[in-house]
Image 1 (cartoon, rainbow, N blue to C red):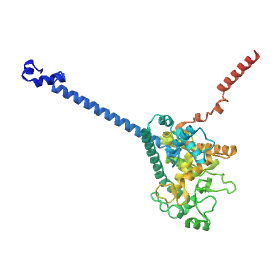
Image 2 (cartoon, rainbow, N blue to C red):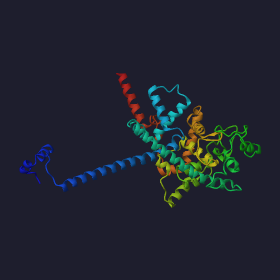
Image 3 (cartoon, helix red, strand yellow):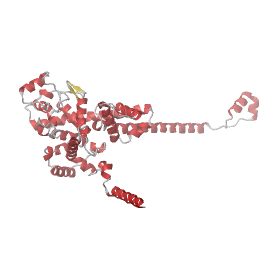
Image 4 (cartoon, one colour):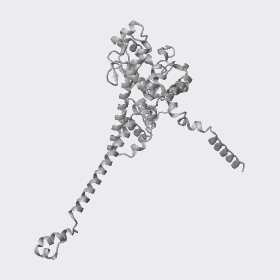
Length: 406
């Protein structure tokens, strides 16, 4: 209802308010409907923002599950970023320390595992970066915890089957593992000693200075057939059946670990593949961890991760930690990675490559999930010898020769 001229004359204050507001009168019902519509829109926007944040959280946490398994077991992601930034600013790598080289290799592996990470990092502000790293760490630690729980039970059952100890190891208990248990103690025993020697057993259990178990020794469980050649400590290293089973339990599935038949170079790969195909025909295959995190071949850091997880499963330590008595897991992990990534020369590098190829053959589920895809091996050195690039080089050579003849 509009305000009449008589009303304005009878009530000057009403006239003054109307002239100031300049409102065009609308019904109370219409205004209420518009307010409700605006509030509904605001609520929907808040829901969308919350859903977007939740999707981001889920994505980062999911992506973070690859970090402990494929990149670094203990080193904070912030340290990897800081080292890469330092190199970008200083432009020097020659004078870097061993630790700095390790950090940079870690950053490169991080970008390989999470191809989107480097560009994403450049486009986020400080708070967004902290939030992303926090969620990645949550996923990384969650995956490590899941694998620890899985291997706690599986390793106990495998050791019981392999060694048939008088008192079986309980899958849900770790207090009766470690060096106080003969079966676990033998597998954990440093390669340079003989567990069957009563003096060695007593010295290790009493933690005497003559028998210090540290990260500077390779444990027996990483060797093929759990036997060591003192004259050639590299022979059979990282080829044990227990290690392959643990790796497959982590990166393919616990059931696939039972497909491991034999160990070392004599493993019947054809029979293993046939067995895997028969099992896949009979059962529904879930998406394996390797597929989820994009692992298409076995890497040194994945092997190092599996070794550390199995060593922890054999120990009597009940909660994950970096140091177990005199044994430092972080240094041990670096020792394994350095064995693969920092060989002393080309001969050792060739042996490392052969070992990694052997590992990829053991992981038969990779072929089942991904097929035989070797695009990551198409290095510039390889592609230059292929016919497309070879033809391009020949044409350029003929072009140069024609120019010189003129």
